[in-house]
Length: 392
Image (cartoon, rainbow, N blue to C red; front, side):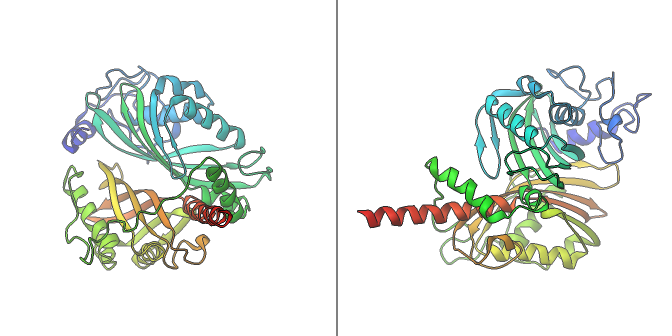
């Protein structure tokens, strides 16, 4: 992927165009733009878009417009021209390894939620059209459950949830994608009991021969040594990304929760799972400590980081991460119930807005439902193994 220096140059130095709405000839930013400004007609390219359909003037235009066409205009067939045949799509509950499966799953979701609309909240990106782009796209979805489907009998209840989709894109086609959708937020708003719902999913996976394997230590510590003093910064592209990786390591791996007071502004707003809206460093600290409390031996491992200057001032940083550990305690993950000791792998994504060196907004998405399914699957596998042993 391209460096941050290229990103900054493209964003700030492109020549203004007349009739370009709020963008002034630069790569689009979502925050202050109405939807009609994000899908302009006949806009000239403002960055290299070699190999992309001519309707796309920049990479933000691409990801917002094609997502809207597929999900809101129901042009699902665009997946054939916007995904490679061997796309690998990672989600908290399952992985997809071909384009036809993406088409099928998209149709299934649209059938269950015919009134859902997804609104682009912001896009953080890096790269270029030669080496490929990486986008991290936060979407706020809303609708009603009006068609019998994956959630059972339709009840007409409304919902709002957040999703972040990270995409690797080259010449108009997405070839890797990571999607974290807050399914627990949806089922709670629909009035569905999450425990039997998770058990139903787990039973289906067990019937397919899937089980949850626990390999023991998760890598936070080597033997009896403490966590590493310094974060691994290999994936960072610039200073603000290195700073982000460093404090994330301090907080989640070294358990130095007091660092949150140094990094976050006193007036920070936290937009979290289950549509939580929290304010102030004390609330962020408690939420973070609560997540770790449920998985106290978990290792926090960032997978990707990118950043873009923000039209609102400052910089937005996107981090895709994995936490892997055991359900050993009580904490923020209340739906998991009493500690089970079961192995959990949590995929999450966070967007941070820095201004004047501190975080003023955080958006974090992970799916508590996926963790509950993992625990139920492990328990079912244990029961099936015990039954098989007793029968011998």
